[in-house]
Image 1: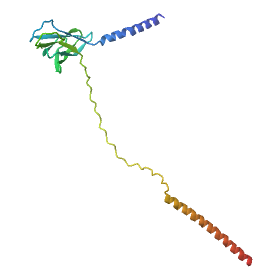
Image 2: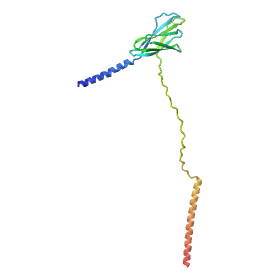
Image 3: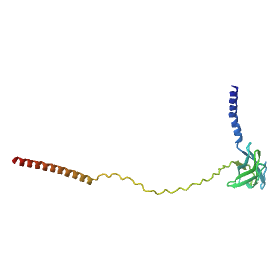
Image 4: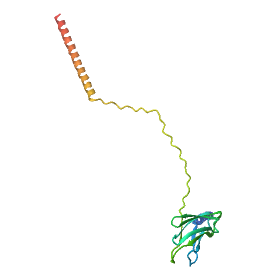
Length: 208
């Protein structure tokens, strides 16, 4: 009884604890953007910091998007942080940047993903949201499948289609009816001839 209770207890513990271990291993990587404290002056290069938190997972690559106001800022350069070995930047339309980082040995902690340097080109003072982060939609690479060429249909011997039974036409019906009629006349004539012939022979025999 004690052994059975122990097995049930272990099973229940495994059932409730396993999802926690599983969720800890698949938690999403978090990014955050930190801007330096103002004031800013026209022509100044402002360094923005993009932090990363892997939440316990070990990653070798990371990707994050960043949008800046083109009427106030101008892109200068990016520098990898302590979390990445290299960081490449793709400039998209509408003041969007796509940053892709790589760490060949792997990173599993919280640190700096990259530094982004932007130059202030605003002509007048004001307050606005200069930069924001956005999550890029990563499309998995699909392996193209080789489609076998479709072989043309082989030309085989033509299949003979059974001919439909020919229905009699009106001319054939008349011919058939005519043959029956003349056959009937022939039978009557032949029967009448035999009857008359017998009567003649019978009369001759009587006279004799």
